[in-house]
Image (cartoon, rainbow, N blue to C red):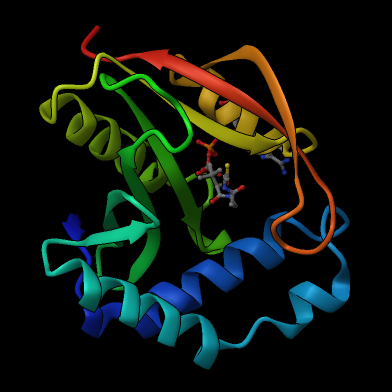
Length: 179
Ligand SMILES: CC(C)(COP(=O)(O)OP(=O)(O)OC[C@H]1O[C@@H](n2cnc3c(N)ncnc32)[C@H](O)[C@@H]1OP(=O)(O)O)[C@@H](O)C(=O)NCCC(=O)NCCS
C-alpha cells in the first residue's frame, strides 16, 4: 500500500532512509558519514519538514515543495519512501522531479519500489507535469537499471554534488509523463 507520509511516521521514514543509504552507498560515500547517520537526527529532520509542510505528505526544500509517499509491506510495515515535486533549479514549469526513492534492502526486488515510483510519477502527472527528471549517483548501477527499466533515460547532464561535504558525481535522468 502507498500513502502520504505524516509527521508521526518520522521514525519509520528515518529507519528506511538510513538502511537504504547504508545498503546502497557503502564505497560511494565515506564510511564515517554512513556510520554516523543517527536515527534521532534524521527522524527529527523529517518530522519538522512534514510538520512545516502542513499535511498530505508535503515538505519543502527552499522555495520548492514535494510530497513524500510511504510504501508498506503486507504486514503494514513501512519499507520504502519516495518524494516527488517541482523540479529544483530548472526553469521548466511543466517538468517535475523525483526527489528521492529509498527502500530498506529487505524490500529490494519485491516490487514496492516500482509501486512507489509509479505513485510518485502519477502524482506529478496529476499536478500537470509533462516530464520529470531525477539525479542518481553515477556509480549506483542498481538504481540506474531500475530507472531504465521504467522508461527513464540519461539526458546528458551531469553534476558534482558537494552539499554533503564530499563530492558525489551524479547523472540526470529524464522521462516523459503520461505515456
Ligand atoms: C533504487 C531502488 C528503489 C530500486 O528498487 P529495487 O526493488 O531494488 O529494484 P528492482 O529489484 O526492481 O530492480 C533493480 C535492478 O537491478 C538489478 N539487480 C538485482 N540485484 C542486483 C544487485 N545485487 N546488484 C545490482 N543490480 C541488481 C535487477 O536485476 C534490476 O534490473 P533488471 O530488472 O534489469 O534485472 C532500491 O534498490 C533502493 O532503494 N536502493 C537504495 C537507495 C537508492 O539507491 N535510491 C535511488 C537514489 S537516486
